[in-house]
Image: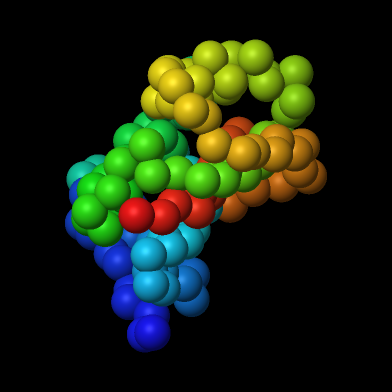
Amino acid sequence: MEKTIINTTKAPAPIGPYNQATKFGNMLFVSGQIALDAETGQLVQDDIQTETKKVMENLAAILTEAGMDFSNVLKSTIFLMDMGQFSLVNEVYGSYFPSNAPARETVQVAGLPKGVNVEISVIAAK
C-alpha cells in the first residue's frame, strides 16, 4: 500500500510542515482543523459554536476531497482551551453525527495554533 496526500482548496492550507490528510489503504488520517476560513484566510471566532461549525465544515471539505463524509469517521479528537465550553462544542459537533457517532476523546489544552478555542482531528475509513 502507498500513502496518498489529500489536500483541497476548500479547507485552509496547512500552516506548518504537514498535509490536510493522509490516506493509507482505506484509512484516512485528517490533521487537526481550526476555524480558519479557506477563502478569506481569516479566523472565525464570533463565539464557540460558530468556531466549532467552521472547524466541522473544514473537516467536511477534506473528507469530501477523499471521497468520504462524516459517516466514515471512526474516531475524533477534540482539543479545547476551556472545558467549560464542552457542552456548546458538543452540541455543534453532535449535529454532524446524527447516528453512529465515532469514538472520541476531548481534552483541555494550554494552547492551540493562532489562539483558537477548539481544534478537531478525525480518522476515517471507507
